[in-house]
Every structure is written in C-alpha cells, then in structure tokens.
Length: 499
Image 1 (cartoon, rainbow, N blue to C red):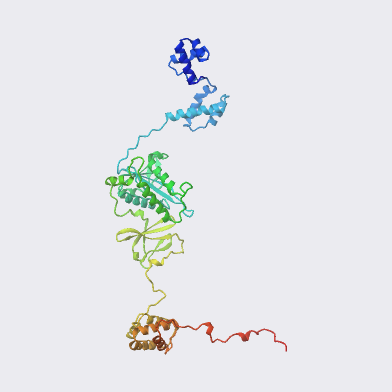
Image 2 (image 1 turned 45 degrees about the vertical axis):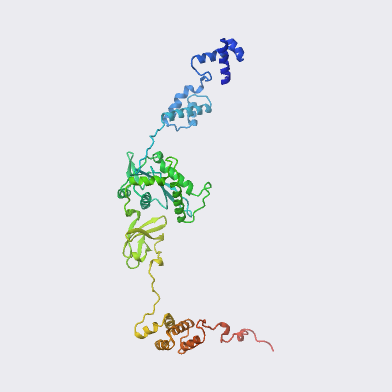
C-alpha cells in the first residue's frame, strides 16, 4: 500500500508525461500501479482508500447482527463466538470481537436517544434528590440536595433519615430559603413519594400528597432508570458530595458533631450560590431575586407533618410519652400540645412559642423503664429543702435580721438545739442594742462554727467587736485533740517480757 505522498507523486508524474510507463520510471514503480491509481481517480474514488477484501466472517455477519439486535447490544463477543463456532465458523475470536464491536456501533447509531434541550422558565420547576452524606461516629447521614432550575440556586440540608416528616421539614426549609414555592417539584421514585407503578403510571404516597397541596405545588417523579430527566439535581448531588464528604481528594477531616455538618452545608451553599454559574454566566443569588416574583407565597406556618405526630404534655409533671418512654418538656408547655418526630436517634420536640412553631428540646432515644428527665425543664424546686418562712411576729422579727439569722435557724434545727425560740428572742434584743448587721454577721458565724450555746452569740459579738469582723472562725483539729493516745495498747496481745 502506497502512502499518500507516493500516490500524489505517481499521479503528478502521469499528468506530466501522459504515459503509464514513463510515469512509472519517474515514480519508481510498476506501470500497472500507475494505471490502477489513475483509473481510481477517474472513477471519483479516493486512491488512498484500501479496497476491502473478503473475510471468513462475512458469511456469518447476519447472525452477528441478529444476536446484537436481540440482546439490545448487551451480548458479549465471547458468547457470539461460541455460537458461530457451533455453526461452522473456524476463524479467530479476535475477528469475532471486531465484528461484534462494529455491529454494536451500528445498533447504537440506530437507537440513539435524542433529547430536546430543556428551556427552563422562572418559578416553574424545582428538583431534589438524596445523596450519601458523611459518616458521623459510624452512623450514616444523608444530604438533601435541591435547586431551582432557572436560577440554579441550590440548597443542601443534612439529615439523619429520609422519612415523611423529614421530607416535609426539608421542603419547608427549602421553600423558605427560596423565598417562595415553585409550581412543580421533581424528584426520584422513592417510597416516600411513589409507592409503586401501575401500567407505568406512578402511584403517589398518600402522605406526600397533602404536603404538596398545603404548599400549593405539584410533586412529580421522573421516569425510572432515567436520570437524564433530572440531571440538574443529580449534578447538584455530585458536587455536594465532592465538597462535603471527607475524601482523600478534598482533604476534609471527619466531622465530630452534626452541627459541624450543618455549618459545612451552609458554607457550601454560600459559596456555590454566589459564584458565577457556567451556563448562565450570572450568580444564582442575583437570578433568585428575579425568580422570587414568579414563586408562590410560602405559608406562615409549616405543614404539621414537618413536626411529626402530636403529643399532649402532662399538666402535672410536664412529660410526654413516646414509644412507652417518658421524656421531659419545658414546664412552660405543661398541658399544651406539642409535635414529636425522630431525627435519627434524636427525638425532636416542637412547640408553639408566641404563635410561631419552634423546636423546644431534643432527647436521645431511650428504652422503656428509663425515662429521660432534664432538670433545666423544671423551675427551681424546694423538694427535700425548706426555706424559713415566719409564722408569727417573733419569727418574723428574727428572720428580718438577715440571711445569717436564716442560716443559724436551719443549722440549729438540724442539730436539735434546745431552746431555739429563747435564743431567737435574745438575738432580736441584741440586734436592737448592737445593730442588725453585727448580729446578722455573728449569727452566720455561729451557724458555720456550730456554736449554739446560750452565751455563744454574745461571745462571738464581743470577738468581732474587737477585730475587723472578717476573721474566719477557728476550729479544733486533730493536732490539738484532748483524746488520750493509744500508746498504752501497743503491748496488747504480746507475751510478757521475761524478768
């Protein structure tokens, strides 16, 4: 086979001499070669084109095409070769692979899917999909990824499950991030949206229909096994996973808390929504300001399914019962109705605060017989303690001295001191003579030192009158104990010494 340069030289030599033999002498080839290339040029055929030669597999090509057509291009070349060998083909498997590859290419060319470009319209479509989120202490998380098709504004929300309350909560949060509700919401055929298909018609989950009706949007699903119908959401999931899930590529460290994942998602949204989009050459936040005028208004209150199921808070102990387990609720909601839902292993309790729904507490999942009670949910309680409250004029006069008097009364009562009433009357009389502040300080010192004898209060007053009144009371220690020692017992149990 001559190269293109050699063929051009042969044809140029023939055009110069007009003779096959003379052109052959100039080109250095046989005159039959010159005649063949000249005749090919005269018929309009490319002289450099190699003429196909018959092959052993030509007789079996119809069978190859039949097998490829019947399998929709899925059959392998090894299976085709086995069938051809059984039919008498004695060529190599390499030739069979080339024939199968050519047949597949022809099949795909005849069955290629051509999509009409999707020209988006403001305020019409929103798409959402789920992505595998980062692991949190070995527990799986999911990423709710959605975008407005026209403005390309994206919202990413991390969640711990994909239940109906979670979907409703994510829809509500997404619509409020958009500042409005689009006409259609397109998603995949998960069980939370589609329970099945009958004659290729998707059957909606009855729990998702009222959510769409409440927000004034229509929830639609794409054709099964056809991700091209919602490629925007698929791309949003791919980008979110690439930037948020820790990998060796992005060098992002592992998350320690769920709050860190939420912060990372907020930072991701702030970055992608303020960056110039490759398709529109505009920032999504700028286009969202224009698209909001085409969106429907978001209801003031979210759909109740976003909060979960209702529970009545006990009006006495301010608790609710979920799955046979009691959980405490802030006492301000005692006797009211709250909403509960599971967010992974956390129980989220939502209440109405000043007419607005808000999360009031969260609890870790517990088991029956192990109630979860939080002390902060209850007001300061006097259970097990008593605060001195006067019941007559004498008690009122004594407690009016100050907190030192109250401390003295509590400690004296705990020690079982005799004659507390007379000592209280004496303290009231001393307060009139020596001043309320001095007596109150002396009573506090007596309570700390445990001195409740008849003359102790007067002694402490005299001592404080000599000093500045701030000296800490002295206490007896073991170093100055009057207890006799045990040295005399050292020989106990020992044999007597011999004389």
